[in-house]
Each structure stands twice: as C-alpha cells, then as structure tokens.
Amino acid sequence: MEALLYLAGIVFMLIGLGLSIGLHEIGHLVPAKLFGVRVGQYMIGFGPRLWSKRIGETEYGFKMLPLGGFISMSGMYPASTTAGPAKGVFRALVQDARSANDETIAEGAEDRVFYRLPVWKRVIVMLGGPLMNLLLAVVIFTILVAGIGVQQGTTMIASVNECVLPAGSSATECAPGDPATPAAEAGIKPGDVLVSIDGRPVSTFAEATAIVQAAPGETLELVVRRDGADETLSITPVEAERTLTDASGQPLLDDAGKPVIKEVGYVGMAAQMGFVQQPLLAGPEMAGDTVARVGSMILTLPVRLWDVGVSLVTGGERDPNGPLSVVGVGRIAGEVAATDAPILNRFSVLLGLLGSLNVALFVFNLIPLLPLDGGHIVVALWDGIRRAWARLFRRPPPAPVDATRLVPLTVVVATLLIAMGALLLVADLFNPVKLLGG
Image (cartoon, rainbow, N blue to C red; front, side, top):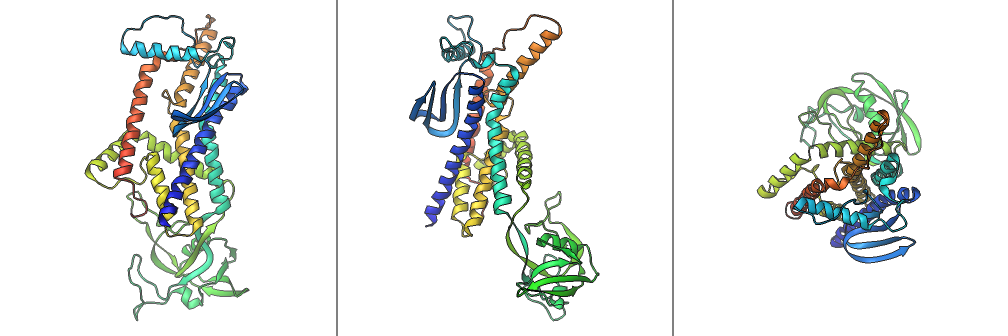
C-alpha cells in the first residue's frame, strides 16, 4: 500500500508538471495567434514524437521526454540576407540558426512573422508563458489557503497543562512544588471552545494567544462554549518565559536561527490543530512571498549549486530550501503521499509543492538570457530602444535585431542549464533532500 501511495504522489506531480508546461505554452500560443503570427507546432516534451495532430496550420502533440515544451513561431528573427559556407564553429552555429529560422517562414506568409510584430506585442507573447505559470500558482495557493485552509491552532482546547514549567523543559509530569497553571485553576477543560477573551471575540488560537501574552498579571474574562452552552470564566495569565510560535504552532526563529524566547503572559492550554480557511487575498500573498523566496534563491544559484556538488561528494546533508530536479520534486511528492497522515494534510502539501513549482517556472523563465523567455523579451526591448532612438534623432529606422548573432552565447547558457540539470539529477538520485527525516 505504501508503494502505491508513493507512486500516486509521483504521478500527481507528473500530471501537475505536464499541466503547468502545457499552460505555459498556451500562454505563448494564444497571443501569438491573436496577433496573426503563424505557429507551426505546439509540443509538450522533447525527443521522439509520441502523438500529434494537425489542426489548421498548427501541429499539436506530445514528445517522449516531458521535461518542457515549445511552440514553433514563424520568423522569430529576420530572414537571412546572405548565404554561403560558414567558417569556424561559432559562425557555423549562427548560420545553422539562421537556416532553421528561415525554414519557419512559409511562402506567402512573410508578413505573419514574429519579428515584425510591434515591440509590445512581442513582449506580451513571450511574457504569456511565465504569466500563465504565475496565474496557475495563484489559483493553486488560493485553493490551498482559502479553500482547504492553513493548519493552525483552532479555538477548541486540546489539552490543559496542570503546572507551569520552564520554557524548553522536557519534564512530562508536575513536581509537588510546581505552581498550577492559570488554565487549570480557571477550570478550562479539553473540548472547550474559546468564544471571547477580555470581551474580544476570537476565531483562531493565535488571536487568543496574542491577547493572553499581552496581559500578564491581568484578570481576563474568558467565555468558552461547553456542551453547547456558553460559560464565563476568569483567568489571570502569569508572566513566564515562553518560546514564541507562529499561527501554525512552529517556533519563531531569530536571525541566528535560534528559537525566540520572551517573558509573556501564559495560561497553559494548547489548541486542537485544524485547517483554518484564510481570506481570498491570502492566495496571491502566498504566491508573492514564494516569488520573493525563489527569486532570492536564483540570485544565489551558483553558490547553492556548489553546495549541492559538495554535499554530493561528501555525503553531507543538503539544504532543504535548495534547488531540485524534476526527480527530486517527484521523490518528495512520493514521500509526502506515503506518510502516515490524514489525506487532506498530504493533499495540501502536494498542492503547495505544485504551486511552488509553478512559481519556479515563472521566475526562472524570466532570467534575461536566451534561450529563456526573458532573453527574448530583452531582445524585443532592445529593438524598441533602437527604434525609439532613431525616431528621436530623425534617423531612418534600423534593421530588426538579428538575435541569431547571440547563438554562441545561447549555446553556452544552454550548456550550463544542461550541466545544472545533470548535477541536480545525480544529487537527487544519490543524495536526496530529506524533508521528512528519512
């Protein structure tokens, strides 16, 4: 059964990845067709063709390796003006790129080429793919936090401590001299539901905790619902050293990564954990926070890749927040699906992984280097700047930017991307990230 669940997690992530790639390419395809560009192919995957069907002028299909996708637009770059044998490796690469580009320009459709579009239309076409991934991430995170909810302490009391113990204490029983907790003295019982504290209604345990922690030594009126009826109790928080936690019950950490301990009001009760639905805007906010984290990771990508290589050679533990290959993501998805936890908990984690994957696709594709979408956007913007400069000084419009001249740089970038993928793949196979203590 565990093996089937593990496989189900991998299949879930593969389907999610295929959907993400497909929508990314639709983000390019739809505006390209709306702007009149001839699109010859829409393909998911690379390598040998598994299936395809031509609808109108476009061939739609799937290829063997589901690690990406592409659309083939007519005339990404200006047609070649010269021909002949190319001397040198780089010149040969440039000439091959020009020849391949020329083949996409169908006879009679010379005006339906990408490079002739106004700059703003070219930017929209190339931005369409990454923006589809961002939109999908927002939808996923909104379903996750507003539909399912975030696991937090609810207003139902799960347990009441009998005595006040020091912060970080490992003791499980009270000693004769330990003072009783305010919650025990007030008569709070497991199963009670918090209604209000100090006249303020509470809907989460985090709200109740904030009120209690801010009122050491003050007597508070506490309303609980017990057996369907409301009861009013009095409770006086004591001042005690406590480890501060977030809404999900996880310890807050300082800049050094150590738990934050502070003198606050304390009563000694713990909440029943459950999924608490958040406002709709929490989905976009979560996507924005993830974009910032992924962007920060990409800015330090060379250092992180070096750390992955070192951990692979030495067998050291990998950074759980570091980069992963598709295999690594699938492996984590399988482990999550096979854990001994409620189905809803596992499903929410898998949704979070898929949302984060789409954010990574959004941010990574905006890197301003060919062959990534960000590189094509930079080429279009540079073309627009040159034309604006010519208009400003009343000069003849310049020839369109010939990005095939950047093919040598593109090959270098592509080689680095392949090397990065290979490193992460090997690391995920032989020294995987351990998120679940495995």
